[in-house]
Length: 137
Image (tube, one colour):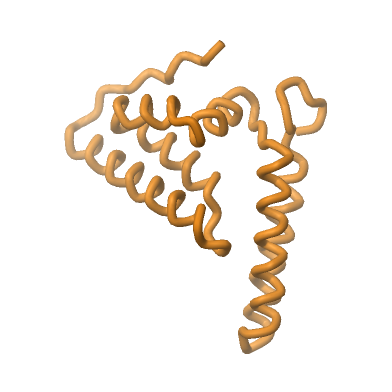
């Protein structure tokens, strides 16, 4: 059973336009992230849905009904659920990016700082529930 969309508060046209612009920017980054291993897809799609909820009910409806984006948005709204498949994909791409950076980026502190951020992100990500009703959060 799909969740009802969040209510769209009445906003000035300029503010709604700014939210729509953010939603489109995040959507573009999410689509690019599907093809580039250094750019994540899911967080940008979730940010796009957040901004669309504040600026464009039409874009939000499109995102929620999209065959690829819709399930991740609905799962996140229902309790911060991230699928195991998404977790493994994120882990694999971050690992590959870390190896690449260790090999090709100097000074060494730059990739080490980036890897520390990736590790923190993965620790958070793997603590997210994988389906509704999981005990872990």
